[in-house]
Image 1 (spheres, rainbow, N blue to C red):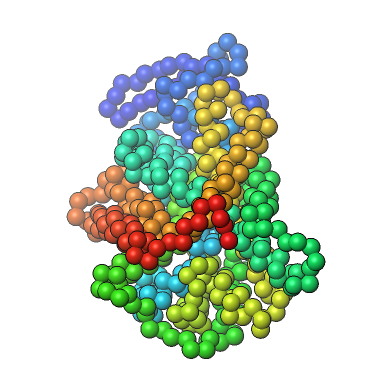
Image 2: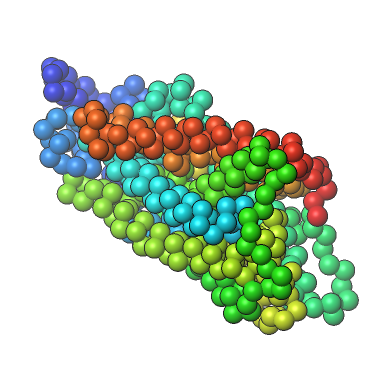
Length: 515
């Protein structure tokens, strides 16, 4: 890059000459570098040779007219050409739909019917509908905030947008733990579910006729983790678009199979739709709030939206938000077609008898394991395993990006392939260790849902208010303040409720003893 101009609306023009960016030759003309986010002016990269050259500066503006009026030009971030989230920017609306659908539907959808056992028909449907619309609105806000019309920046990661909006220190306090859990913690949960489902799949296929000694549950965890680690060697987020497509298809497949089989088989004997009530008024209240935490946990995935959008090209005439929102609309139409029938159909078929652990998948095997085709049971289990493997990749990608960024920023060059393989293997087998050590992690879904809720339902509202600065007391200003404050209050109540329920009912703690 040659001359770098930074012109503010009320500032004098300053000109600085910088040496060219050192990058792999293949990156100079690729969308990866030419469309990457922008770099702070104090972050210097060593040139490949010592002779500076002058060239016309490129400027990438998500929305051309506002940027041209502001005349704010900054230089590109060469680091992003070497990081897995932004290495490739050749994505499109279909890739975005695949990634969004793969992250939006998952094992968490299987326990939505459990929430109906506490809330009942009316409040269960109302809560599910409001939560779906609320998270879809905040998702729209994040898509619009990805590109800043003030600075020309593209915020390619959730933490980047938080830091730019709230300040780096406050962002770490507010969002670092929930985002870390939504990445690493989800991968641990996927190993637990994937390993257990592998065992179920083996039992269905074997049918009690196999003479070989079946693997233990820990060995199934290890088999699943090894497959996930092998698949994680795909270099960047765009390269796993096919994996996300397979994950999306299998997620839609097993959700549809489960609710269709449940409805066709009809209501189980002695089904009841009377909401489960606690012994005391306090217990009943906290049970309801803990159930709301389960519902909110089902609508995770917002921590990946900015990362998914970062894989898309962007120029002043074609902002990435247009393609991204098109992909999101496709994905969440299919999400709704999975979640609502699964929750409503499952509650209709099983009522209060839905198992708390495993939800609809466990109910399918418990109530229809003998009268349903072994092919259907095996196919459902296989779909769950494939979806878990696919989801592991997209939820693990932000952690891969964080780990690799340490090396990239220090060495000012791309991570060697063998080092990347080691880091990703360490992450995968680290998650395996946690899954074996804390196999009861899935029992804390209500508590975790409360902790992660602001990332989905509250922070996007506050970030939109901070960045867009709407006029006070306008309808959009009031809506975002109400939703943001309500989300924070609800998060606090859900965390308290989750802790109370754990203390009151207990959790079967079994360290290093998965079953």
